[in-house]
Image (tube, rainbow over the protein chains, first blue to last red):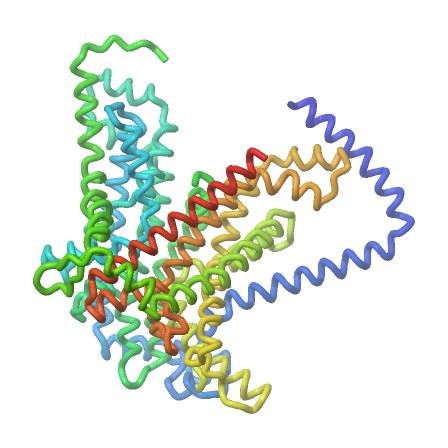
Length: 305
Length: 299
């Protein structure tokens, strides 16, 4: 293989010099065309980047203005009057946003911790234990990923309803604790942990649970953090399920609270944008800090799927 | 692998632990995933409004859905149009962006990050922001109309013909970066040596794309296609926030109709039947796609 690559390099070199000879004759036209193409390409890319960012810039700008300026037909990017902080404090007074944020935090953290733990346990078991029906069961777990949410949503609601969990944290947290994708991710990663390490611990008389917590988990940190990130962001932003099971204002999560704020007879757009900004901050922060892991996690879903 | 001479009990004990470890996951899946699926099927043959007991009606729900319910027919049309509007655009643009980002472009990582940002923002926030942008009185909509035409902003979301295209645009805006990232990962998994060897053999860029990139990217493409179609048939949040299914059902996609039937009209049985139909549609679409790709591989 190395020889073939070396061969490729040699021949590439020879080719390049040949190409250089022919292109020198047509050089000016080719260069200008290439330059134009490059400029066009960059223009398009920058335009697209602008379109991607524009709504968020709009959100930031509107969030920092007083209501009159925010809803006027005349638009200035930089607010004439910078009132971001006032908007936030007034909004907190109008609706129990602090409560919404608190609820969202409780739900998101519980689901993240729970999902990671349950998926890690199951993934470890599928990867490192041998028991009858193991592979069949794993296939079964994977196949549940094919079931669309909207198919189970009604019976799920009924289950929650009959358990008396409506308008409680239980309804928001428990159904979200298990994730077939999480199990899949953990199992894929755990299979790459050398069996020898596990066996050595077993021979040393280590309890299975201890082996899991002291050897497997630390080694699985990359997968754990990827799953934690995806879990947190998914549960923090969750809207459809809370919409269905929560009616009590005091139990609402932030996404729900944002939409309710808009239904009042006069919509305070500037304050709404400010609170939306706050809703976006946790996910944005995680994204920027853990960018590589996050993108890798997203990419893994595509490669292994 | 060193041969182990274990007596019966340690292996057996291992089995017990293995089962114990998966118990929470399997238990939760059974209660909150498998059971609801079966219950949905069961409920689809009944009518129920959450009061009293479900009443058996056999296939009546399905018959009514396909022969009498105009809302269902409309919703199917809307959902299909939405899917056709969003998906091909996403695939082509996602792949194109990924191909561009895979080359040595200046500022590549900045572009990649910026394109991915809409994916990071939640659907709720995206919908609320777009609602204000499209607002006829003060959004960017109003501003452009005033500056260019000295007119009022176009009421996109309350206009029969424009509402769905706007939601399609929103979804494309939000998901393009995500698809780009997945395609990019697939592209980067293709060893560069293949391209070099092909270049030596005289293949140009286009030929390299057809004969190296596409075949090796096929699993990724299949994955993206399947997941984005499944996702597009479950779109809900933008519709709930932007149009509530209006105007006159122009944006009422199937999931939204299911939601309305279950929670507004309290027709749990009928809504369950619709969700079963949704499930069947998605299953069929997925199987077709997998088949097509398998055939492509062999051929």
